[in-house]
Image 1 (cartoon, rainbow, N blue to C red):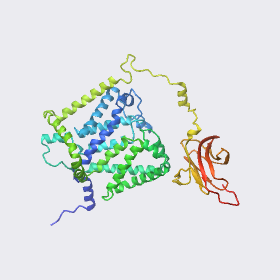
Image 2 (cartoon, rainbow, N blue to C red):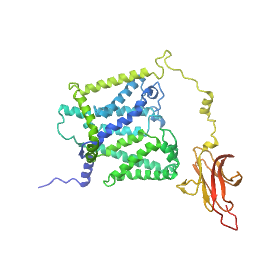
Image 3 (cartoon, helix red, strand yellow):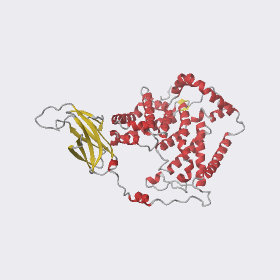
Image 4 (cartoon, one colour):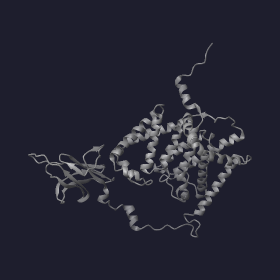
Length: 500
């Protein structure tokens, strides 16, 4: 008697990896959080749809940035504004799980389209990640639980079992593979960026308010050792993430590291949407067993009493929905209402004066001085603005000054470090050692080329000096930029030859 050939262990493991059936708790949580987060900036941009995404405005497609011209067709305001409203409705519909798959397909497609039309302000890294996640959510069964679709299926009798439905886990696996590739690619990019490992790149970002205010980052930016340690830890974590996240022993460790990493970017860099999108994707790593353990020890004991009221309120509302109202017709009516409402709201706002007798606001002439400055770029950068800071200490970590001091002892080597703001030209920078009365004791300098972001000056505190108060002065183009006072304590050792 012949037996059927046994499937190899490799292929059986691969089949189990992609096609094991679980209840999609993690994908359902991602379905709720991701559209909520991604729609926040899109709602804020609604009043500017005419300017950003239509023929009346100034679109800059992503394809134009790569020299491919306008690949996408730019729509008129009469078409683009209703479509924008439909996109917002589909994102909201995905959150509540009403016509989930169709909402994600339409909302995700329009989301990608409008983002591609405005590569200057709308298209960002989180837009790319969100677009991929919308697609993976659309091909998953994330609407099978915690959704209006699930409630409709139970009411119609299509689902009668006491347990939630199970489906193959391959959409969640694709989400996990996506994040593994993202982190590994990000680590390769950082490895090739010297300024990331020296801390300059992170420091300039922390001190800026390009995104939102970040007071914590402004404080941390002044501590170079923290930036250096954080930079190396971030790269190491991104490199090992795709290898350790699949291991049972290290899976939760690297995930918790990732959550901490993204929360820190929110606190220190003023990023809100990007870390929230990434944390939404982390729900794709939540398995059925993970959720059941979490629900047993946390939801039932702590959130159970809190969740009773919204559950009863939702059941009260849904039970009063007329059973004769087909879901497809209701959804189509909502789409029509969204298109009409968005058009009417944009007309009522009338930010561009389209309903005025003139048919639009007239452009005001730009100030001639400002226009010439923008065209000719004749404005010179002040010498002070070329330098970020100037500090003195005795040790460095990763080429950055690790300690700032105002008191020194004889025999120590003082390090005076200046950090520069790019871009700058080739420069001759000097350091002046002055006594308490402002007399120059020593003067030494070096060339700082255009690609350099810092310069270190070393000075041996020897027996040429006596105990007292001094100052180290940074000088460039015959201008004194910074002055750092310090006190020299102790006694010089007697020597036959004077030293610095």
